[in-house]
Amino acid sequence: MADLGFRVSLSWVLIGLCILGFFFGPKVFAAGAEKDEGDNHKALGHDNSTQKDYDQVRPQPQGPNGIGGGSISGTGYGEGQRFELCDTDLSAVLAPPYGNISKMICTPIWNTFLLRYFQREDHVMTIVLSAVYTTGWVGIGFSKSGLMVGSSCMVGWFNKKGHPRIKQYYLEGYHSSKVVPDKGELQLVKHVPPVVALHGPMIYLAFQVKFPARLSRQPIILAFGSRYPNLYHLKRHDDKTAVWFDFSQASAVNIASTDKRDHGILAIIGWGLILPVGAIVARYLRHKDPLWFYLHAGIQLVGFIIGLAAVLVGIQLYNRIDADIPAHKGIGIFVLVLSILQVLAFFLRPNKDSKIRKYWNWYHHWSGRMALFFGALNVVLGIHFGRAKNDWKIGYGFLVGIILVAVIVLEALSCLRRSKKPSLPSSSFQMNPI
Image (tube, rainbow, N blue to C red; front, top):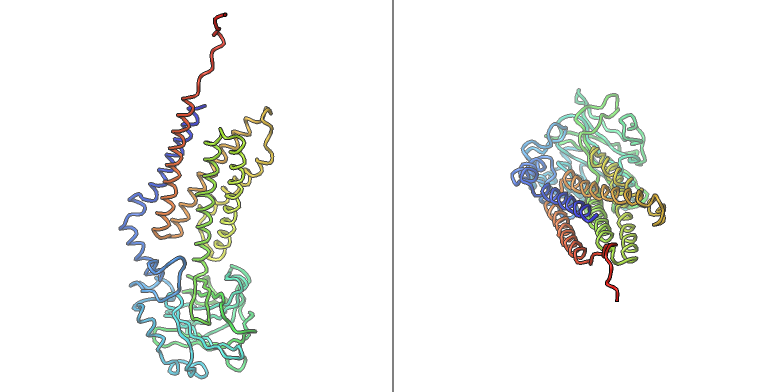
């Protein structure tokens, strides 16, 4: 049994070393690869160098290819130039009342999107959204929760004949058939019709909305598509984002980035720290009976709750950004099922003298090891697919390294303690009679 335990510990050490190798291996996260990937992100308007714990929406330098293949292009619009676009005289572009509002606030919000707005005391807001445009459609939506479903949007475009079109849409579902034209919860001001205009490379969507109260912090959805609508039915977007926009301070925070951060932190704490510590307690504190059992059960319960919270935040994030990462999602569901089975196994634990106790032990030990392994693997995949910065990779790699060192030291001490135990005398041994 001692040899089996040593082999199990050695296998976990090797697995941990593989995880560390994945983080710091030259083929996966080489400096040159990170540079190329960073350049591609800048071309997409996602310059990670300006991100902190979450994305503050600020003007980003655009790459030479804009966003590539879509209806919006960042060509030639760097940080200073995007702010200069706010100085454009709207009176030369839009008719009154959109073109003659002197107090309108203007701020870059996403890619080449600029948002201008002015909020009156009667809660009527004038909004002008602009972006670099070639073909397709551009839209802005107001959401209650940050999700696409249930939001009301204003979408504008120029058709193939060059005629301007702007409509309100209500998003009843994710399929294009569920994007219903001429329906929505935005109360457009009737005597001021919405308009759409072209000026140079920019498209302008202008409309007035009356809100029940003065807007402060509001979830906003921005999207564009490169294909023309067919009979006012929108084609699927090429790209989109959701932000919390603070109309009182003209600032925005990317919704997906905050959910992504929370999902990652919970997963690392639950599956990367607490649950492995609970497993270490169960293996190396058996000589402290029954203290090890209560510590193991309590620590694993806390880890399960935090891991479950990570899964729930991940599901919300998955739906919010319409992600397509089947490997990460599938492993997450598999790990969640294993962890639920572990919790059920605690309540169905047979007595020590039961004949099936050894089978329960076998199931509990190996399903727990599988859950920890795939949980750690999924954290690595999440960091990779989430394009996390180096501090996430280094932080989790350091955590795995600390756990590996602890396992090695504790395993050595355990082997030393077993070797010092006195062996029992054989049955053939007899004491000399007195």
